[in-house]
Image (cartoon, rainbow, N blue to C red; front, side, top):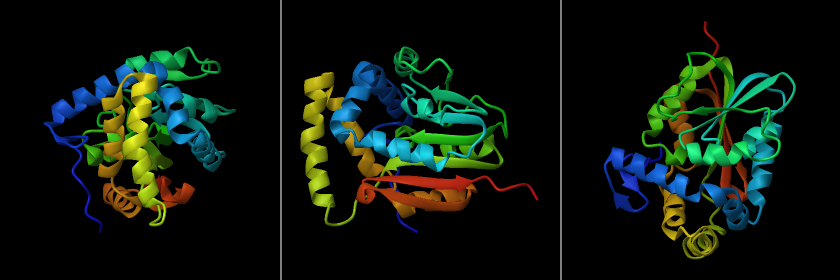
Amino acid sequence: MNDTPDISHSFGNQSVTSEQRRARIRLVFDAVAPRYDLMNDLMSMGIHRLWKRTLSRRVSTAKGWVLDLAGGTGDVARLLLGRNRHVVVCDPSLAMMQVGRQRPGSGGLQWLAGEAEQLPLPDGSVDLLTVSFGLRNTTHLTQALSEILRVLKPGGRFVCLEFSRPVAWLAPLYDLYSFFVIPRLGAAVAGEPQAYQYLIESIRRFPDQQGFADLMQQAGFTDVRWENLSFGIACLHFGTRQHAN
């Protein structure tokens, strides 16, 4: 099994207490909320939208209650809207969700304030839980995975879209772009270079493809697998809550 970095006492490259991490991350997203979606378009040159559409296609047959965890402004949740689905955005940042409520196409969504480590939902209440670029901003990752498993119905599916480790030939170019271009974009467009420096450094501290799959299996998920996107820059992780015997 791969070594998994401890993210609970880090904020970017700084050592902090878990409560400091939680508070600072909340401030980051409150600060960048008005221009978060624009920055995602600029940083990824729009490719993040293709990744999110791929996620929505992979769960096209899902029905029932869908929870988009760390759903922010609801861009993924809007893709998940459909017949026989009730889609709920759950995010700890009220500022992010307030921006999302004003976006076209958000009328069919429900909005719920909550953190991944303590989801405000009963056991076995969700048919599908998705999260896109959000779990690396949790404070206690293993606790978040346990909570996700708890709220899924038996047979319920978990799909996580997250940045990961690109293939070897691409990694040096990706690192240069991440560390030198993205913080400057953050300064120029969002006025928050430190926030985007944190977001880039948080990618490096998140487990790679195999490391996160190992954590999912340890948490109790079955049918664990992953699918690389854009040569591993991003990755879709899949898991299922096992049916009761």
